[in-house]
Image 1 (cartoon, helix red, strand yellow):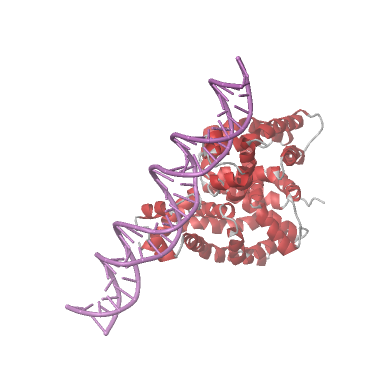
Image 2: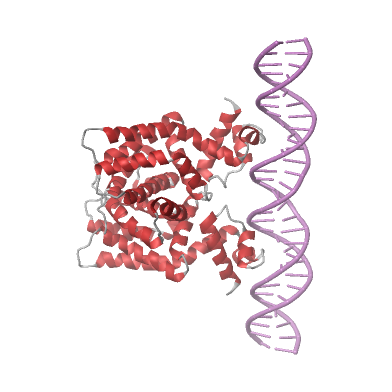
Length: 208
Length: 208
DNA sequence: TGTCATTTTAAACGGGTGTTTGATATTTGG
DNA sequence: CCAAATATCAAACACCCGTTTAAAATGACA
């Protein structure tokens, strides 16, 4: 495995777990078993490393997400909101085949992108999201025409919040679920529980 | 105003905005206009300062939240999930009377508690939440008896995720809403949009 | 095989971190 | 009013940070 990949893998593990500001390059290069200077040599800076890390997932996710949402959009069959969200779920879960814990790692990284560093979210959305947002908005509009694009915008972000936040604290939650309810859970279980929730949330009646 | 309060106020501002790891004691003491050593003198350590900051809100919020949920529980009138969540909203919004931007500051701090530092969430929940969780579970169970306490547990956390995450990125979202939709929004607006969403989410039909 | 570009390395750089110290003010209570 | 407790202060401590440097190792190719 080449140095760049070793760095990306170690960075993914640590960033997802401890956030961007909470993880040092020395921890990353130590776990990756490469020299400290390698990060700046191969990526330029810590910030660029973070972007490269997100790009590795987005290059995989964006096309399959757009494709999946387009299918919903162009389908002749009648569809509901659970279908729209299942269109999200499959591409997200397929990240697990790409890399171990791919799905939860990506969602945790996404969460840190929002909360760790100011402005990062803006860059992230404006450079990567417009296509996905438009597709999602169109898909929801198709199955729920009364909902304004403004409402859809907000409910999309509530939904992202639910997913991202839940994944960010998955470990703790699975811990608690195990202690208090004697349940053994994994990411797929959690996602299955989320879908009805967010589908109902997005499909909520419009309050005046 | 005494030194302890000056420190707490400055810390609240900075921690909410930039997270715990992203804020230094020097920034805090500089804005608070107190000596750097004052934090360790009055609080012992940075970690203890964070706990004291959360405690300042929780001591205010927990009793009024328990009271509000108990009222829902003991009410003779018929109630729905929006009533249950309104029971949350009023105590939360009343934090705005306690301190400027109290509501969003607290929710942002809560968000950082989840994502910034490992283990902090566990401490937070186990030492502060059991009463609130029990009350919420009972209140939801009252208006939606078919839902298992397991389902309620998950949907409560999805709901917290929605609220906390949304508040953590409120600035960015309000920015985007302003640019893309020409909307001027504040925290109360956002909360009003969240309620139907989470009420519908918690009230979603049970999937087998 | 020898040259040249690429990659890796150890070491240092300047600066920021939380915390501690010991001296100096300030406030409090007999 | 003065001694004792409390609070503030500048300075230093030891450590960790991201980044840069320049030399050493490795690779590709003629």
